Every structure is written in C-alpha cells, then in structure tokens.
Image 1: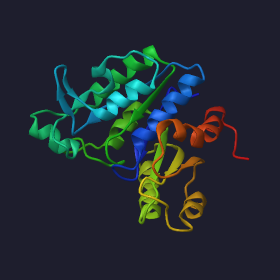
Image 2: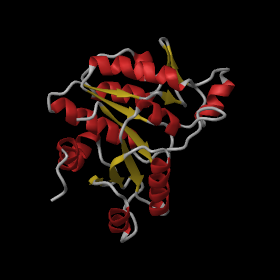
Image 3: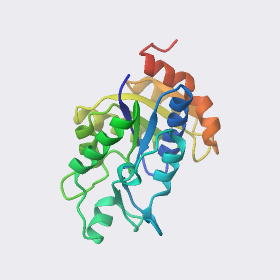
Image 4: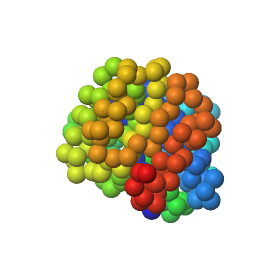
Length: 229
C-alpha cells in the first residue's frame, strides 16, 4: 500500500476536500493511522493561533493522528487567490523542500498521508514551480477529482496528460456532481478515456459520511490492487 495519495482536481471547488475527508475516515475505520495534509492554502482566516485553513482543519478532523497544524498546512495565506500571488503579497516564497520535510514528519506518525492540493494540477506556487512539482517531490500517486459539469471531459483529459508529462501516476479518479447532474454520456466518456479506475460517483450535495459509501468499494480495489469486476 502506498504511504499516501495526492488529491488533485480538474478545477478549484470540485470537491477535493470532500474526497480527501472521505478517504481519511475510510482509512481510519479500517484501523490505519491516517492523517491529512494541505501544504498550501489561501483564503485562510485569522485566529488567535494564526492563519488557519478551513480545508486543513477539516482534514485534521477526518484523520486519526494528532499532527501539528504547521505540518498539515505549511503555507497559509489570507488572500483568497492563486498561491503564488498570495505568497508574493505576503512577502513569502513557497519552498517545495519545506513541504517534503513536513510530509516526512507526518509519514513518521501515520500509515497513510492524504495530501490535498490547492486549485488544479498546474496551479503556480512561485515564478517557476507549480503544485505538480510538489507532487513530483513527494513521489505520490494521484487521485483526480473530476467536477462533473460542462467542460469536465476536456479538463479531465488535459489533467491526465499533464500528470503523465510530469511522469507521475494517475492511480484513480472520482466523479463528483458538485454542481448538479452532469450532461448525459459524460461518465461513460471519462470511463473510456481515463487510464485509471473510478473510485465512485458522488451525487450532488453529498455529506462526507455519505461520500464514504460511494467510494469505499473502489478505494478497496485500489488499496489491494485488484482490478474492477
């Protein structure tokens, strides 16, 4: 079993955190020490303890490992914009090596680390690097969350090609109807063209507890390496 997975999406707001939470709870129920990680987050809120990401806190609540917030969310920015712009505005630089160090500390505490990206696969983190470079450094298989809406087929296939271009592995994908039912034929088209198993199809307005039901069987196949029946 992999030490972790990286969760990316075809866009921002397509349900990466929902899927990451569901995976963490599923792993915890299976008796694994599972912890989430949101290395970079923008749009964070000011608290007495510093800036906090709602996504990072949600992942911490879904796992069963008591990790330091700074390891779960290495870079937190207040402005809700692309991370390289948020970092520049804060006078900071996002260092992939720092993310790797935090990831290794989490790995030392857990059996599995679920790492959630920010935005999509090629979201910039500085003048030359993107989230894809972070994944390459972490050497994690990728789970793609596809927001099932107009344009989803193109966005998913472009993301698959970009993942391949970085010599990373697309391990699985999830169809999330976050904006309502997708147009007819989309699910079949993606199933025929994405070279990875589908963990499941999540209906609109699904809570984390219900999302677990929709991906449990597919995730078990990925964990055990068994082909789809």
